[in-house]
Image (cartoon, rainbow, N blue to C red):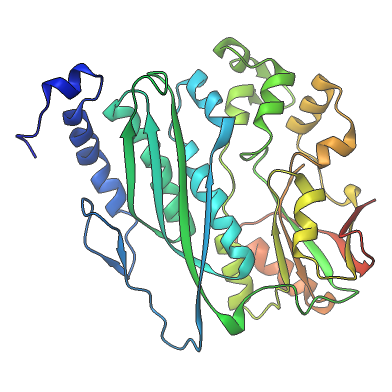
Length: 347
């Protein structure tokens, strides 16, 4: 492709040679995510993956797609781009594990106002780090230079992941019953939801505001808000490998506990969650105080410190908590399953 160059396209603001440089920069990053099943290499028209379905009676593909959202505005202001890719991967893989599927591969879509190879390398380094944490391969993607559509220093980042599970081992909440316990796995702060509200109430329209060190946090506001979304793939894998009956899982994203937990409940049952059972990270208290936001709205917008909720039988609670601790997770028994139609009750 060394002889590929268009003066006319360059005059319109699209530098194809910069695109080739970006590909050369990210190629080793992408290849660092390769796992058994990957076919081909970077540069083809489609990402190839041969899944291992040995021992499965009825393999089911589970897919999830998402973006980073307006959290990107914080990355722009901080000029720090190596973590938002983790968010992008996390928002997808954390969704598909709710069905019991383990992610196999990921593809990203990056649209930029101007192709700056070093910045693209930084963004993709986050995507590949997220893939490594999730145990999946980055097998393809697209970088589109769109001058006049995005400002030169801005971009959008989205992606999707595909996972695999045997139908007989899917997690669907069908065996939930009264008395099952709920485990909450700690979040890594705000994750990647509610940033339109965060930016509004904290007045985040310039870098100076983000560089203020806040004693409650122990670091700057910008550092706190750019903490990447936690990836829970290993936690679910470990629980199931050690025989824990994971009956239902909910990824706590936009809409908070109020919207997401009911999605894992079956008709006639409600999740009763005790707010005092887990600590709320200081960032949420700062947001609530700064915007004078009602507590109900906080729990209906943010994860409030719980990024994943899991339902398991009561007699397995000790075993499950021990496994999660050994997997590096901070987890709490946050409630139980009761009869009811509300889907979730926060008490």
